[in-house]
Length: 124
Ligand SMILES: [Zn+2]
Image (tube, rainbow, N blue to C red):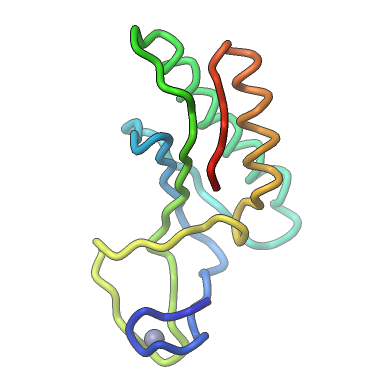
């Protein structure tokens, strides 16, 4: 990945960490999950991601004014630059396609949308 500090392709995601989930710009207090890049954990990570998205959908389904679900961001601070660049905790990076693939995101949100009668039209 591209490092915003040294401008090289030297950024990589750490093998374990935490990802925050923002849906339409909203994040619940517990809207995060642990990941592990070891392929042995792939199913467990997807399952935790799904659980957290479901918690969000359940919660959002009770809103009076519901917007179409269009945006999802997966953000993490668990990133390292091979050149040793330092980042503040405010600098966060997308975990889409590293921790969770776009296809999985699309599948999970589409089926949750059907389950909770929420419109989903992702723009990722
Ligand atoms: Zn760097």
